[in-house]
Image (tube, rainbow, N blue to C red; front, side, top):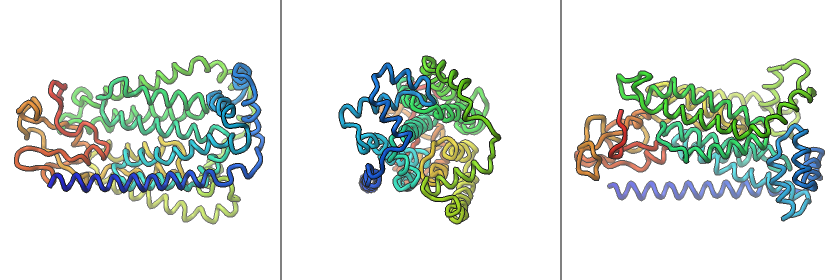
Length: 419
């Protein structure tokens, strides 16, 4: 029985990988098609000009501009290998746009615990008019989106591990966010959201990691170590940005052309919705006719989300993942597909079951021949005892627990600190 389950899971994984590969090829074809058909426009011309400078001159130019230098450094090296034509200048952005597709699939599957959610996110990114537009532009926007999305997925994964991750596990997150803030200043908004989300997770979601009757600040052992690690990682990104901070502050005070006038929230919301609906090529009058069914789809997604969150056993397993995927992800396809395709975990329906606390065969782990203590983090997803995976008194852990993004489900290793 267990062997048949393993074979079925393996086959589904192979089909999922094949579908993802097909989406990546589709994304590549769409982004390469007529990549050099149009001449460079002004901003792309700035990129081409900076690629001709020496690195010290490039650094000095960007220090007096509104963009940090990392993307320009990458293009500077690339054109010396591939040339400086329209196709060569735009190819790095197209390449980043293709990488976004498997990244969306990974984040969608990790957060939602569903293969279908991952593929839907990847499909949204692959065919998004907005993504296609900026993937064919020799600018830094696609790269900053890729860095922020990958970092957000790692951030979520580390929080779910509840402080079990060592500092080496956070290094990749820090590296990605440092790259993001040195690519575009708007990455600081994502970094700030990460810090706020970690606080919300520790105050709301972290309570749900504790066994019943222990939902107090002192009793649950996973949320607060994760919060300390998360905020330390965010602070490390800030420290890494200190060398460039004086140039950012100088531009903040000297260039006031971006700040005059009054913020019109209704106009901003309308333009953002139209951009995600049809990219940059749809006229506003035409886009407004398509906006109503577009918003209806978003409303249905939000309603389905709220319904699934209501079925959850606590706020931390429903509302917070929704908040994460709706506000924490950078732009990722038409209509913020992060918000559309990452519902909370399906409680009680993740394949695989674990025994309830107190049932098992010892404290030293299965390898030592004693009882098996269950990790309380498994209860956060609403997993119940019984069902597939139990043969007699000994639990047989199902691999889909781990595929659903629930690291640590199963026996607690010998010598580990127990709640």
